[in-house]
Image (cartoon, rainbow, N blue to C red):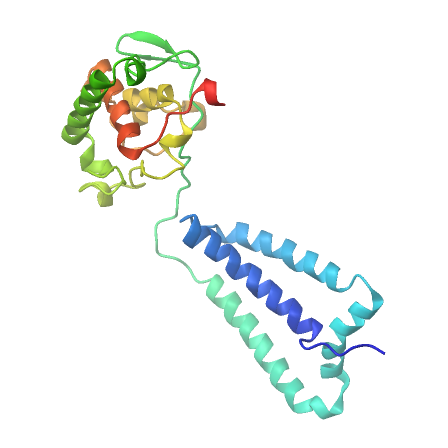
Length: 259
């Protein structure tokens, strides 16, 4: 004799699908603070629905429990009123969803942004060529060799940042500078673990020195309001700013040693 379930199989299936859907929303929007594309969410949910249905119908008994309420709704004469209501509401909801999804949008199309584009192995700046695979911050060694001097270098980098960079990236390095709202896309949030914490200092030196115009042409069009800072700052100033970025955010630059 089959034991009666507290929650019918069909309702279990619906609750699981709804739970996973809102789980994705909470994970991306709340936990990761990222917008999950609608097309990607739809693809995930298709996999979830298909996988859950396969689990629930793995046995003949499970398949009958799942299909039973639907079959009864269609065939049972005593459920005529409920059946008529369902057959009216479901098409209306489907039509409403289709109608709203086809409405034209008057917003500017979203342009996807690659936060960390693939850098070239070599680049030119300040009238010379740099090899990113071997380039290192010449001041990083003082972090251990001479902490007092290192502290002074960080302060100098902070002064340069406040005079030149905070207008976009913010005085707290969170991407919320006075000019940030006028830029599309907005400046990077250096406090985010997904930005400079994932990068080597040589990468930052390349991006800051060459700015938006220095991004790779083969993957154009890149979008960046970053100026070509080699036209305004010295090589030493850029290296000191990089020291300040990591020091202020409490991050350690990525290096070959800790890969």
